[in-house]
Amino acid sequence: MGASGGLGSATAQLLSDSGWHVFASDIRQEIFDRYKQTANITPLVMDITNTESIQDAYKQISARTNGLDAVIHLAGILKVGSLAELPVSELEKALEINLLGVYRVNQQCLPLLLQQKGRVIILSSEVARQTAAPFNGIYSISKYALEAYSDALRRELAFLDVKVIKIQPGPFKTDMTRGAEQMFTDAEKDSIHFKKQLSKGVSYLPRVYKNAHDPVHVAKTIRKALESSNPRTAYLLKADASRMLLDFFPVKWADKIIKRVLS
Image (cartoon, rainbow, N blue to C red):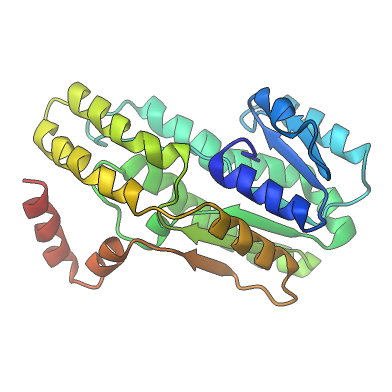
């Protein structure tokens, strides 16, 4: 899932080059142009918010194979803004894609996973390990929920010999990271109460993207989780040091630091 994005395309290419056959799915039709001449990759259009679309993709996969070694979830969206101001529809959209899409696809693909005693590899985020940051609440909520889902599913599917593995990356050079600056600018324009604080966020983001890492690191970690005989339950990857450090402070101290930095 999400095979047209920066992390998805890096993963599909690396696995293909490593000898794996990849069913690379994305909601965008450009998936066919991207992979039409790539060995070991079968492109599929799939809308993970639409059950019929998932079923159609599953039928196409089932026609080509009797089992899956893994289902890898890389699709996701980011929304910036205040939880006090954003409409509930924005939270619903994030949950629809970042959580419920994973839920739907795993249920649909379970029969093929059971045939191979395969693995479910889920892209979470470093934010799911941290106290939620201001103006990143919608994304954090969706990733917190995804972590709970992943943990529960891991413990359930252990009875069926199917492993569930989380990847928790920090900032990587993707369209999502690149677009965050514009998201903050738009949120600042639309905000009533938090223009000053969102403006501070805009000034910080160019440094985040400049220091972001190459998506190939995520691809290599996914390959490791796929091929290891004893994979970890979670892989924390290239976490942002300043955000990790903040959680070492008592919560009240961290809250004061954030308020001072954004004031």
